[in-house]
Image (tube, rainbow, N blue to C red; front, side, top):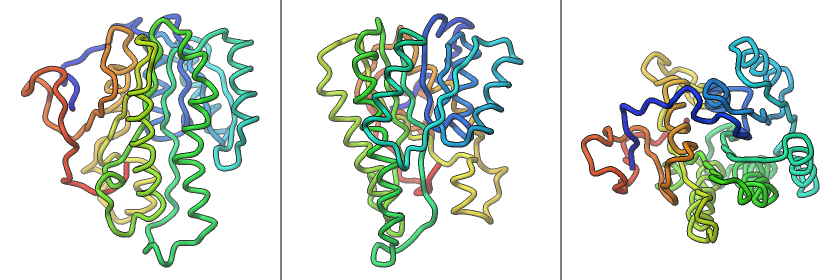
Length: 270
């Protein structure tokens, strides 16, 4: 489905709410973190590169947003114990969690399955699939306690379409999409919502790595899609179990809330 192209979040949309964003130091994660802070959220910046997280922290403070928190974590090697510790830290210091946005992803290269390095395969699965599962599971109790908890998974159509050469990345995104769908159906607390966003081709470091010769001026920037994440984080939005495909036509051309399949017009990662 698509979201309202004319959606304008109110200045204090996320006031007094706490949102954790993975991959917050760069790309879509950075853009979402800045947007959440701009609209009143206390943002927990999660990622592996402290220097990048500190830069986003400084941007938020300089813009006058609520003081964020930095939580360095390497999803590639994190264990269930690490995620439990993260949960305890958030509960003891911030006392709540209202939103969880999964933006972190790993794609070192494209490869035929038969040539894929086994170690790289496992690293990609760990970051793109196992980590979102373990992190969401660990934080689930806090999210359920929120009056309007929200979880957003960032997915990619190369997974659902099963395209050649996308290897572990494609398989992991297939799994992530299925994980989000199942979780949304299993919800017993109707205040909690689980949804997905397929950003489509976006100018990120991940995309530049696999398409180094691509003209970046033809791609949308991460900041251009941040409002879609805000729309799903909006406490007034009751949508559950849907996927926003950001290359779809504006929702104004369709019945609000009507599901739409993701378009196969591009098979590249965000």
